[in-house]
Length: 415
Ligand SMILES: O=C(CCc1ccccc1NC(=O)c1cccc(C(F)(F)F)c1)NO
Ligand SMILES: [Zn+2]
Image (cartoon, rainbow, N blue to C red; front, side):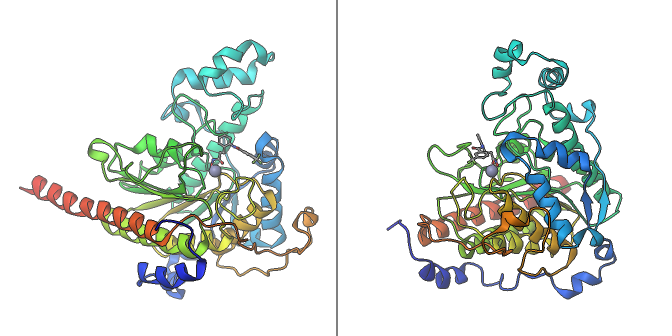
């Protein structure tokens, strides 16, 4: 029967799901790789933080993330690189001209009321509030992700991170879900100038619909999104049967989960899918969106994840030693989002962190225990073992078809 099952029963059963994926820590030999010795690139400038801080749905979040990373002394282990603004031409690589023009008009326009009706058609409504600064903010956060991608392409490092990016809902001619410009699509298009096959992984609790839509017909970009999929939950897309269109069929992967998902089932399932995806797609570059709104205690109140889930999945991908772009996204409990992304930043730097939050400007936000870790809580877990097994088997079968079809594809071209 499908229904909530207790965590302990799940735990021993799920171990059979991924016999191979026992140890997900980055092996010491990975550190010997010369590229590994280069410090991760960390995109930062005071202006980038200040503009993100001002955004209504994530007030002061960017400062909390950056200041905690700084308080743990991680900045010295990274190459701090300032962002640039995305050019109009770069934006038009994905977005529609009329949409970009309208957004940039907002920057110049003073009385926003006049644009009311036109804003509607571009999705600039309640979820995506407009103000004079939106265009500059969106251009800068997108330019930050583009700058990170460029650092990977010029071999400046093997890993680059932009915690102010990850805006996965933005469509070519519409803002959506608080996303205005899709920095992820722009960064993937940039990476594709050098890498033939790019793998996109979306860990946010919401389906990465904007990125999936952009590449759903492509065999050069595989998108994998794990998210809550349940009636009425935004954006509503991302079902198990959504696998891509035309020649891109099979290159879109969705892992739809119900409320209450926990680390012990999230990690094996995601890592098993990643393992198979790498086997059949053999990507040359990787983009990972780490939206932290799946954490226990987030106002989204959906999953019961802790930063361990994000850490294990990221560590699993880092073992591949591919040029890797790490991005932010959702995350509406700012201290918890800072806890999670600081943990991930430490992994990129190969550093261990004390579980005691160090004293710093926002120290009081981490009370009452001032702990770096987050407990999973005990909300009901609606994901049954059977449902997880079915999701896993369906996805593995879909990916295996890709392997056989792509080899047929090769035979055809060779013959
Ligand atoms: O996080 C998102 C977007 C979430 C979203 C989609 C569509 C409409 C609104 C939102 N955002 C919120 O609902 C939201 C954003 C910030 C804070 C809150 C809160 F009220 F839950 F705290 C809620 N994508 O990864
Ligand atoms: Zn989200």
